[in-house]
Length: 404
Image (cartoon, rainbow, N blue to C red; front, top):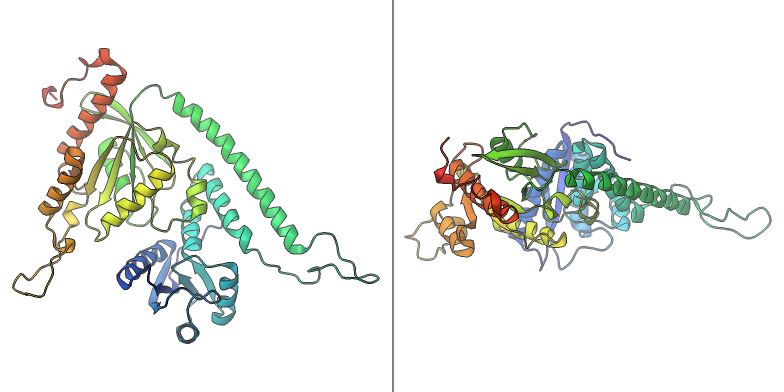
């Protein structure tokens, strides 16, 4: 099921819609993210197409005129792939493919392809394959028509099962096998987690490409794979970390994303057991991204789905070295100052007033404010540890009292 795709510059165009629920600004943000996804998958975006409409066309997603404009552009520039920002139905995908005569993908399909490329372990590959099968099942269409229906008359009675039904049965059986395999691996991983003893567990969570793996490498002095692409990390990595003299376990988990396919959320929930069973969450945020507050909301939504939203959490605002506020002309009487014009100090005071001392501002890449980060993590982990083992409170004094 999983096909490893050779990374190359595959020409692609992106298509999105502007609706009442998704204005022009929001549509532009999603297409920006979709372009980054395309780049991660090994594609080159030549152009973006958008159309204003009340709701997507149920047959072709976009209108007839825009579809013709898209078809002409694809033919003229020999584009091989058209990628739509929202999930397409099987009928839409089929109709669009006939018109454009090229490969047609939606956001879900693209993310599944990236996951298939990035999956390294047997567990991750099994989870991705399950998600692919669940995505494929409702989209199966008959490749043959000679057995499409049972016909009357002598010699015209077909088998009791049509070709499409056979395909669906095969995929359903595959899904059942993959779920059983995941369940078996989950039991093994659960035993592994129980064998770690009563050490405090800390989990890094956050939107994809916010610097979780980079932070993991800096704090744990390990070599977790990190790259400036979406979903660089799929497999959960656990490392033993010692800050001053206090040991604890830190795990780096898969990043989240807006419009994350339902199939992936379901199949990767078992991977997120590491988050569900952790004692402390470090919610890493890329503060240099203009929509970082939307990212926070998306992560919190998924944390709520896996019953992990109420855990003790430190908000770690990363990439302060890359943050730049938009310039604001205070002499312009018409101009309105928005959050995009906030300075870094203003953001600090904003989030300090929201969540108090549970917010940190660092740069994992440039190692800025990491001493403050270590102190805050130490103090929080120590508090959890001492509650669990009160007699150990003398082993781990306050951070300032420890001499290196």
